[in-house]
Structure formats: structure tokens, C-alpha cells
Image: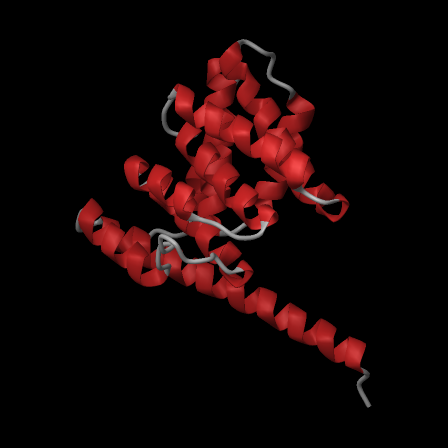
Length: 212
């Protein structure tokens, strides 16, 4: 007979697999719709993942969905909407910090605006000031992208930090992976470091979603 712990583990694994399948299917639908124009892709994204609602608490159960949405908004060039939606999220510190960090890196992956870097810096301060001791992994992840974004202020490109971001991206949903790899590529370009590997991996991840 299976114990409660084993059953819980099996359920957890099934949920992870189901989430990955849904993210891949949703990503493929967005990319397919993009062939008909950005408006069509945006409609598909809004069907796949609903945006956060103003004045309504953002539930933790929506974290993975919204991380993908924020990454897709950056990829689709919907920068104004991404900024707006990042400010709409509210709830647990961990959730707010992860979503705003994703928004900032998705923006910085595609453009250079001082306010995007400021959003990332504020988010890093938020998680380290208000986040509890159990949020070490979240703190480390946000600290790493903040350190990497420091190249915009003339700081050196840290290959060790880049490797950690790369490894996390490789375990993320498809849109997050693309956005994080593009972020690394862009920071490398700013620092006059070769970005070809990051660009190639981002293009490869995008290509896996393209219609065949």
C-alpha cells in the first residue's frame, strides 16, 4: 500500500509534468498565432494566461502561469502592458518579487530603459528586506539577475553568475527560458563579451515552439 508521502510525491510529479505540457502547448499556440500578426499572438496569450486583475490578490497558484505570461509579453514587445501588469500583482512577497523580477529581466532582455533597471533593484531590495529566511533560493535567483544587470552601470560581466542564471533558465518554462537567455545575451553584448552561445540557445528554445 502506498503511504501518504509517496502519494504526495507522485501527485507532485504529475502536476509538474502537467504544467510543463501546458506551458509548451500554450507557447506553441502563441508562436503559431504570431504568424498572423502581433495582435493575434496577444489574443492567444490572453486566452492562454489571463492577466492579473487590479485590486485583486494574486494567488500563489498563478505564479508559474504569470511568470510565463510576463516572459511572453516581453518577447512580443508589449512593454507598456508588461510594466503595467507588473505593478498590478499583489500578495505574498515571494510572488510579487518573482513576478516583478521576471518583468524587469524580460524588459531588459529587449531594451535599455533606466526604469527597468530601477524596477529590478527595487525588487531585489524588497525580497531581501521583507522576504523570510525560507526564501533563500528566491533571494539568490533575484540577486543573480540584479548582479548581471549591473553591467548596465559599468560593472563586469560575471560568468559564474551567468552560469547560474543559465542553469535556472534551462529548468524554466519555455517563455521564461527564452527571455532569460536573451537577457544574458544582451548583458553580454553591453559588456562586450561574446553573446553568441546565449543567442543560439534562445533561438533554439524559440524554434522548438515553432510550427513544423
